[in-house]
Length: 220
Image 1 (tube, rainbow, N blue to C red):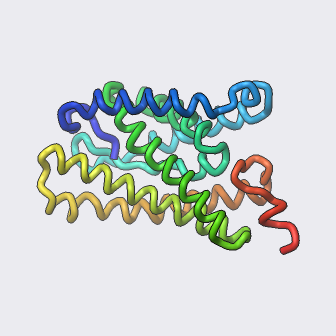
Image 2: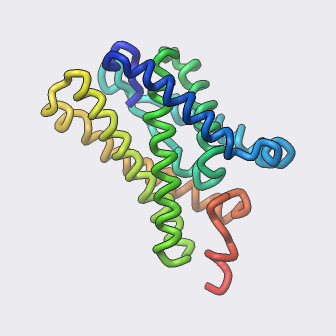
């Protein structure tokens, strides 16, 4: 899932850098920096960055230049909101790239594909599900956390497959030997996200920005 520089089609690395800068500048306007710095959330955000760094550092080498790992993006978005989560993902993924000797020139593209894309999808899906599904704790855990995180992993796999196809790779081997791994990773991502979301909403519901205990727990 992580691309190295030599596996990216021409222009994708520079395009990824521009998109990464644009995403960070856009989210910086929405992050609420003063409240973040003065409140207790900053420590949690930095702690989440460390957890994401560890998660992105545990990679399986599928083929030269292609490394698979879990994301943890959906839980970060549910916990901190999209804007702050994207900065936690940026810090964690950059630290993982430095710690695993990943080419830094390829980091912006990987950050956009594996971080920004699922963060936006998670944010959109959370808003849609909260507006259309019943207000129940198990709905939040199994739909907003588990199902959305699995869908995001599959979406990332589809995006990575498209990048390979645009780079000249044959469609058949991609569909048979590459994309199915993301279906398996989707189950692992759903299990991890569901476990993390359960622990957070049970023991620290006030830490989860998208979880309102008055809405999900009272009068149930």
